[in-house]
Amino acid sequence: MAQDKKYPNVAIKVILLWEGKILMFKHKNGVFDLPGGTMEWGESIMETLRRELKEELDFELEAEPELFSVYNYISPGRDKHKILIQYIQKLDEQPRLTSLENVDFFWLSKEDARSIFADEKLLDKIFVY
Image (cartoon, rainbow, N blue to C red; front, top):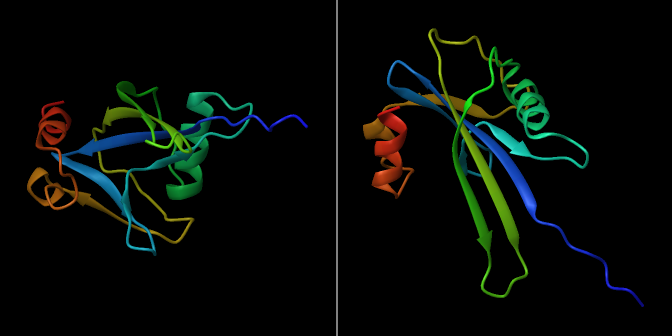
């Protein structure tokens, strides 16, 4: 019997910056997250990001954001494999956002983001953009 093939879980996220703050979510389960989500089969990276932003915030990107980072995680037991592709986009004005998925979203300063992000170097990289 052939074993089913497994593929990595691929998530596409965007860091939206406006007036020195980043947009974050807080899901009902208490988890903080950036806008974006999981790629569906046959979808391009930008199709995924555009779909997720439309679903989560009723927001449309005007231009393709800049690639910020790529993370590849394989668990010690090799039973989980995740790839995270993050983009970054500075906004000239505050967008009108509507949570279509019923999540709380808010803008965080660097100081406020310290309570969520453990990596100070990552925060520095985000907030000097």
